[in-house]
Image (cartoon, rainbow, N blue to C red; front, side, top):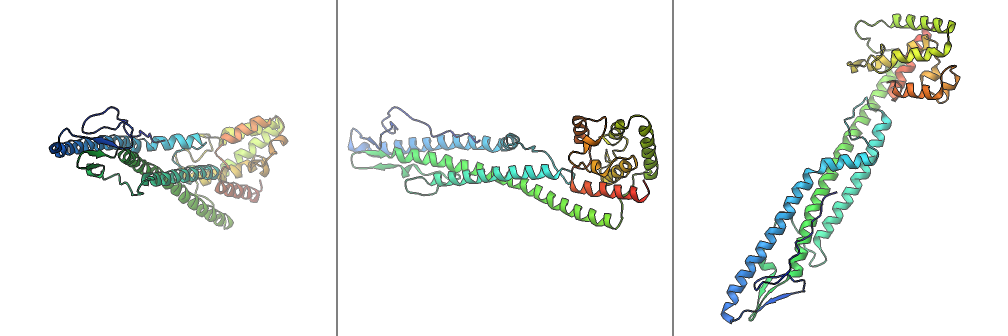
Length: 333
């Protein structure tokens, strides 16, 4: 949250200008002909006070602006978000949660900016305080026949409203950056929706993903089938363990490693070889409760394996997994 300083509290009295906390401060010269000199000194001191306060607020404003990205990072993470680069490969659930957090924070900052703008107009004359402009000392100083009067409450009110004007800029800039992040995620959601539509259309027409160089889907299918036979003779429950080592992150069949353009094929291969290995469609598509049907594999182990495996976290992944399953069945596996 941006740091608020508050105007300098000046105590004590000086003949030409003081802010003792009273509503008005009168300065009475010893002689009538000194009134002009007294006015000049009062104007000089008021001018310096305005400069000192504005300078403090301006310097703090720079610090607040410089800290915006750090503050945003802390608030997003504090709300359960990630504040990390995301793209179409990021889980839809993660993107939706992140976007909702950004919208909530954005609205809060916008509301706070509005409150600061209203506060900068004050309860006095209601005039706007522009952070880029400073008032003249004459706005707060008045010379009479016998005295010079400095309107200290009005001066303090200006200082407070000046800071509010500066703070409103910080909150507005914070809101702008949050909105920019939210808009980027919205564009990713649009791209993901387009990718999903295209994937469904391609799968429907059996336009399968490109195969990475040096990879043979048929060989993968035969190898998976041989493991099905092997584990049916040994311990059936270990089949899932073998399959996991093949498809996990950086595993032999993790085709997206270093080659994100082959991610769709990786999901297609996952569904196809899983089917060839005798793993049910329900398990491959990560249906709830599927693990209990696998002898020798606990629910905890299953959850850990599948939560770390790079498959099925996105609707597009599901399309290609299902397409791979259908392909293997079509081939007789």
